[in-house]
Length: 256
Image 1 (cartoon, rainbow, N blue to C red):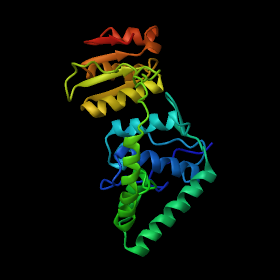
Image 2 (tube, one colour):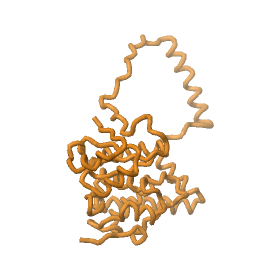
Image 3 (cartoon, helix red, strand yellow):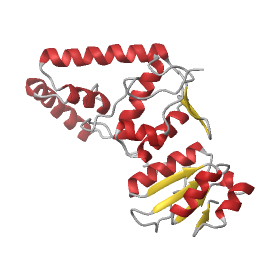
């Protein structure tokens, strides 16, 4: 089984001046590193504390990155053994690298801003630009008689249907609405989706979130004594070990 890797040997570094948000940038770089073999299948990624220090990012940022990689199938985390990498699409990664290198080479050759090229791709630059000049004038000239004809023989208006509501319900927030910015909050769960939602909310609201599994005694103890509020996920409410440690918490909120 491949040993633990570090980001430097795998060629993964954080660019503080990059256009992408830190988490999005690191997710893309780690996916490419895993699929390209720079981080081998089954290799153990750095711990959150060690990896965040190596990259120069906040530990919550790297925690969010790992949670997203897990939901996308690029990693598996087991308490006590770390986060293990999984290759998903090696051929696709090669194609992405070739396309990216070609786009950057074209930008350099034409003197274009490479970062702006990347942002144009992200924003959907393939949309057709607005017509201008003589083509626009010709379009306007032909549009006038069409508009006149439409006024003389306008069909009856169809009844306007009310907009349909989306079928899926938006999940309720994980963090309580009255939690203050800068507060220390703990989350006890093994639910990756719940963890990802909570980390995204914490980053948006400026809350310091720490996550622990219900069976991790030491981390649970540190979390209880260091946090003003401890949130217990549905999957952890009936765990005897978690409940024993959480009795000493100052404030516990159980998710319904």
